[in-house]
Length: 530
Ligand code: HEM
Image 1 (cartoon, rainbow, N blue to C red):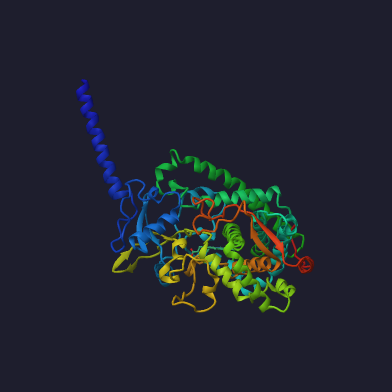
Image 2: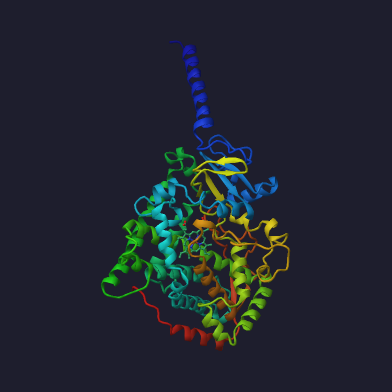
């Protein structure tokens, strides 16, 4: 065969290949065709859809698209998956609360479910909706009811006091500016560990503590839309992006080891007859729910991943806000309200773990969560059944994202001052904008809402009340906190928004009273598994 014939044969093969690829990408690659009634962001490419157009900060780009197009809800393509993004309070309420039975499912994602969770269990928050998930939710819910929360008070007392004590001592009684991050990290991790396994770390440089913190952070990155193109473009699972799979496999091994070690410790201390009231021991001795090993691992995995970074991130940015110039007036208002709510500061310190009596501090907690949602794009939902929306059928199995950053700053719901941090908005009706439950979408909403809303609000209330009561918090001049609601985030490609580093002085309001409060708190008895 001569060269010209060969060339023309090759041209035919390439042309046919291109036609086949185009037909495949156009008609077979994407899971669902365009959904009629919902506008689509223009410009997606055949293979990646809008994935790379979302840039390095998916929540902010999605928020900008909603604003410039005046589309509170729109559709995009993330590789082969069609996705609906909800950007306004009303759209999110309609889809996630009013139509909750239709949007209760969660998608299967290659990296998280197929790799990270392959050898151990996934988590409740990532599981599809079925009888098993329903049962697991019910079981977790039973550990955060009001009576169950009373059992949490001693551990909350211990951890918040240790955090205050660390800032007081290491900050040389308010003379040196320090970074508050590690104290909040330890607090959040210890509370979740004590709640789940009756374990805690006393040293902030304990190697297991540091390993859990770093692994939890890496695992959370496998849930982000930004860092896992292989979830949406399946071919990457075998080529260039395969290094994410290798990373996921490595961290999975370490995570499995420390989860197994924690469960074994809880089991051992039970067999020694030490009755502890942690979730692991409750699950191991359960006789009512017929829990399997997989149920137990899924529940505990869910607690460890759901609670840690969210509490930590919220605590840190709340402190950053208080330490900023604008936060000084907020500290004064909060301190005045605490003093009005209690006879003496010692009483306020003690009761901070058992009630939420200061309306201003409770409003501060709600405003921190609204303004700085720790998860900007919430864990994805998937439609569970077909339903009607604006005259079109939304098929079963479509991805749905709540953009909490956009929803929580929706000016049509919160008013023109939605981009201002104002706890007062929750205290009295001082504007035409009244916001119904869930008030903000940082905990999600509807039937898959966070199972630990009351628990988390109580933890955050105790942290902020005790901090404001104990200290005047002043940001350092050379390393001040960044408090802009987008720019504060250290890594916009991660799933959780962890605030950038900053330093602050924690100046005791009254050393005598503070020492008395800490002494009293140190007498609280908390049991550990060892
Ligand atoms: C500031 C603290 C927290 C925030 C902002 C938060 C936020 C969230 C969000 C956004 C979801 C998904 C909700 C949805 O899809 O509608 C979720 C689910 C969940 N959270 Fe939280 N969370 C926090 C603390 C905690 C804590 C402390 C725990 C456990 C002790 C926890 C356990 C869970 C569980 C088990 C789920 C899965 C629910 C399901 O899929 O059915 N969370 N959380």
